[in-house]
Amino acid sequence: MTAEQGVIYRVAGPVVTAIGISPRMYDVVHVGNEKLMGEVIKIVGDKTIIQVYEETSGIKPGEPVTNTGLPLVVELGPGLLTSVYDGIQRPLPVLREMMGDFIFRGARAPGLSRDAEWEFVPAVKAGDEVSPGQVLGTVQEGPMVHKIMVPPAVPKGKVEKVAEKGKYNVDKVVAVVDGRELTMVQKWPVRGPRPVAEKYMPDVPLITGLRVLDTMFPLAKGGAAAIPGAFGTGKTVTQQSLAKFSDAEIVVYIGCGERGNEMTEVLTEFPELSDPKTGESLMKRTVLIANTSNMPVAAREASVYTGMTIAEYFRDMGYNVALMADSTSRWAEAMREISSRLEEMPGEEGYPAYLAGRLSEFYERACRAKTLNGQDGSVTVIGAVSPPGGDLSEPVTQNTLRIVRVFWALDTKLRERRHFPTINWLTSYTMYGKDLAGWFKKNVSEDFIEQRAWAMQVLQKESELQEVVQMVGSDSLPDEQKMTLEVARMIREIFLQQNAYHPIDCFCPMERQYVMVKLIRKFSDLADKAIANGIAVDKIAYLPVRQRFNQAKYEEKIDEELKAVGVDMEEQFKGLGV
Image 1 (cartoon, rainbow, N blue to C red):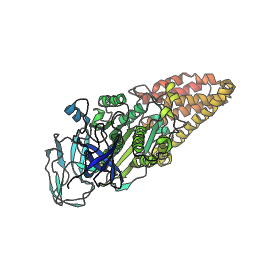
Image 2 (tube, rainbow, N blue to C red):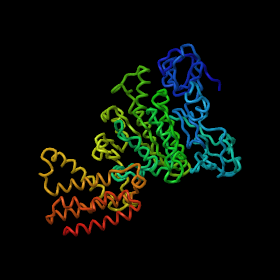
Image 3 (cartoon, helix red, strand yellow):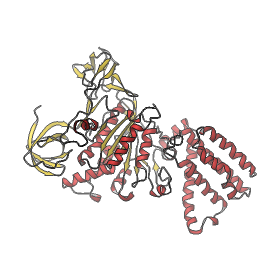
Image 4 (cartoon, one colour):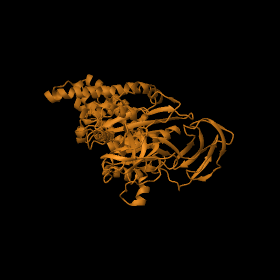
């Protein structure tokens, strides 16, 4: 195919208008003498509007524009894990070796290394019939088995030839199917979702180890959640905890428009974090996409699609993938800037009218599904939202809430009280409760849902009573309501508060979460009996078992300690005559 060439007609920041080419929407073009990469985003008559993924200063009308005739694609294959890419899948460590700390415009490097060799183990033989998505062979990539699959676009056919077991680079032809040569690399356009055989109902939870999330506001595998919060409320720490401890096998972390120092923390801390599943570095099952706030805005807009396509590729192998997008607000700001350059009619707060459509396009690619090769895989999306000044009524947060089914609201007041995670239990919610009820009943306990509902009810009552307390003081409350405040305090301090940096408390399995709630309810029931027998609230509130219970979650033999707390609790209430 001969590349079509035109010239630059107009330049407006990252938006360039060209004439003399006849591309399709979303074709990739090379702009100017330095061949800067761009993408067609609008066609008006004979004029083509292009968003350029690199800095456009210095380019001028009359310079050449070349249409490649191909959409923006990513390379998928062995070597993705541990990689650090920019928004258009240029490997940043490779570019740094070539150019130093500053990347020159027009820099190019393939997404997957052509020098690295991988031990290929065939899974089919000549004469076998294969269909799209079927596994041709496997490669060991760190702790993960990387499956080399028939690309979705290749029709069903017979294997004419397959490579023997041995070490090859990604360009080596590993199979020939009906005359088509297949290598270890697949290419896929980032804006289109990869196909699946069947989508499942979201009825399996993503276990995170964070009590406030797993018990109170669970997220289903293949679901979508939003974490909105002001600066400093702990979005990044929460996402890092999810990356480290959730039961997803692969993590794709997109730093979309975040400050350079925040992204530096992620880049330096992830290799240091020990993966609790394998004992190796967490980076060995992670793909990082770094597109900081000082990088070109157009690449920021593309970065979320790049990350999603990589996540879908691992899902197609049968893995559960957690995709962290930090933050979708910066992505929306990039869309707003490009929209203004295009002179489009602005919507609310200057965001484009299609903001909601683009957000839903992204979040709805999350799913748990039966893949083309019959495996079960999922992509779960957790998007951080950074509303200016913590204002949750702004357009990005509101449009996100219409799409996602889990809302983990971070609260500045909780941060000031040193309550972490700072997830507000009154404003957060989950819509997966009914879908996941069966799983919790089967795998945790028949009465798990009942215990959770009780805990939420106590916290709700506490909120109502606090309004009364602020007006007339706690002394005016009857003993039963004073006890409700004490039990709610136990739920907050013992159960909801969790130390992300403590070796024991950082992860809490579901069985332990259930035991903790049950113990708090047991304390509440015994306290109600004690009050009915005329025991003063102060005597109950200062029982030594409360302090022991508070410290139990930091003990090395925590499960044994919780059993001992239950026994101790009964004995101390007997001492009160209950």
